[in-house]
Image (tube, rainbow, N blue to C red; front, side, top):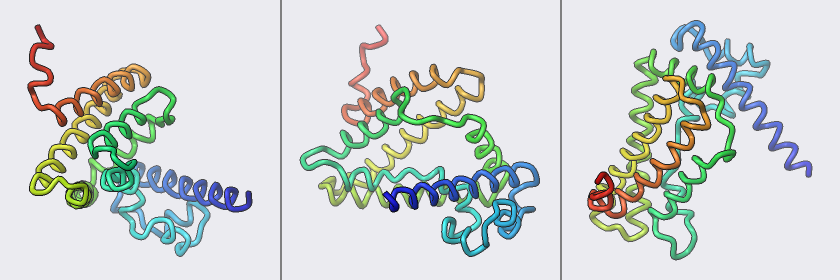
Length: 204
C-alpha cells in the first residue's frame, strides 16, 4: 500500500514538473527558459527535476516516446509481433482507454514546432526507436526484413498520430477523432500484414 502511494506521489510530481515546463516554454520560448526556472516554478530542487528528467529536452520529448520495441519484446508467447502492436494501438484508440488533454497536446506540439532543437530531438528519438524496433523484430525472427518492417511500422504509426492531431486541430470532437483513429489503426495493420491487396475492391 505504501509502495503504491509512493509511486502515485512520484507520478504526480513528474506530471507537475512537465506541466510547469510546458507552460513556461509556451509562454517564453524553449531556449529562453532555464532548468533552474522550471524547478523553481514547480517547487522542486534542481536535482529532483533531473531525477525525473535527465535533460532539458526530456521535459518535452519524454511524452512523445512510444516504445514499440518493448511491445514486441514483451508480447505473449506465440503472439506475432504485428498482432501485439495492433492490440496495443487498438487499446489506445478505444473509447475511455485514456483521457486525452487536448489543450496540453496542442501546447506540446506548439513548443516542439517552434524549436529547431526539439524538432531535431523528435527526429533522433524516432530514429532510435526505429532501430530498437528493428532489433526486437530480429529477435522475433524477422531476419533481413526486420529493418524494412520497422520502417513501415514506424511510418504507419506516425501517420496515424498526424491524422489524429490534424483532426483535433481542425475542430473534430475528441470522441469522433478517436473513433476514426480506431478505424485507421485496423486499416494500417491490415496493410502492414497483407499489403495493398487487402483493400483492393473495398472502394467499389
